[in-house]
Amino acid sequence: MRRFRFPIAICLCLLTVISQLTIAAAKETWVSVRTRNFLLVGNANEKDIKLVGVKLEQFREVFTRLFPKMRFNTPVPTTVVVFKNQSSFGPFKPRANSAGYFQAGPDVNYIALTTDTTGEDPFSTIFHEYTHLLVDNTFSNAPLWFNEGLAEYYSTFNIADDQKIVLGSPISSHVFRLRDSNMLPLRTLFQVDYKSPFYNETNKTSIFYAQSWALMHYLIIGKAGKNEQLGKFMALLDSKVPLERAFQDAFGMPFEAMEKELRNYVKQDRYNVIRGNFKQKLELDTTIEASVLSEAEAQAYLGDLLLHSYRKDAYTYLEKALKLDPNLGMAHASLGMAYFREGKTDEARKSLERAVAANSQNYLAHYYYAFSLSRTNPD
Image 1 (spheres, rainbow, N blue to C red):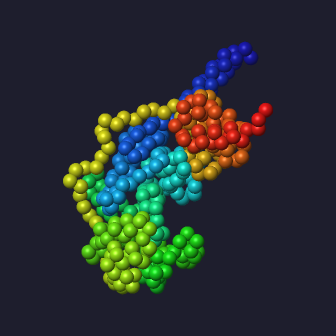
Image 2 (spheres, rainbow, N blue to C red):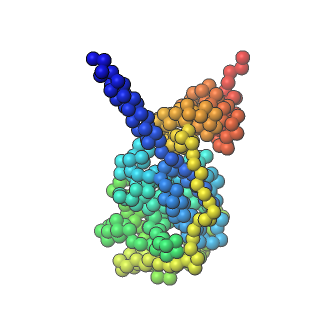
Image 3 (cartoon, one colour):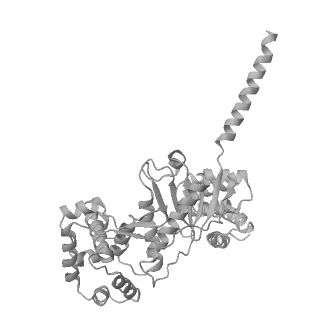
């Protein structure tokens, strides 16, 4: 029996080494890249993450050129989480078939997507939602048809070779809906708000989105294009000019005349498409380099993404981050806000106190910490 002990011991050692190698291999390298308007973090390779940053910056540049006199602001930062494949993205998807999504927040906006393009292109959804962000932060009184129509229009944005742009491609579902359904009178379309049946009832929303897209498509790149008038219209609305008067002053016609033009445009069933080239390529500063994130930082970003998606499993990632780095301010801030959201004031105060001590840049951490102190019972 003695002669078997040595081989068994060797086998056990080998199993231990293999197990350790498996754990080491499971650890992924997470990197971050900062562009002018976005912070990108991810487990995809550096080149792919930079390409995502380039595409988002290019989209933002093209969008802002529609209204050159407007100043587009994003008061809170936007963080983009770039997953290398569907498998790593899976646990963070809001729905199984999501290719990418946008999650707005009071302290940070999140975009999440994967560079694995075997499924649906994630950028159409992201461009749609990011358009909403730009509109909401720029126009104080944007009508719903304008907001949704513009978002649908820009969801088709595509750029090749960092220079060749295609914008305004027909959206097949909208084209088919406009062929098969009666269009809404513009007065009805313009009255749709967030409480309207045309925005909330399944059998009515499709025509609202389709017609909002068609009207925006016509105004931007229709027969003559009405970009200047569209900009004037939004400026008048921002100045609190009543809708009908603003429309008349900007476009030089009443609702009914525009409705007739739109019906003729849709009836032709031929939608213009912008195909253009920038004189110079739109690209990132080539001196920008990626920095490697610690495992604790990666877990904190994932936890914060889930926190902003209102998911309970945010705790799992935030607690793991703090186990790896007990002094990580970002993780303490996110955990404190999670506690605060659940009404756990004492737990929130302790975490937020650690976050503030670590010089957290999150203004909400400071706000919630001060509020939690005000709720503390005096001794």
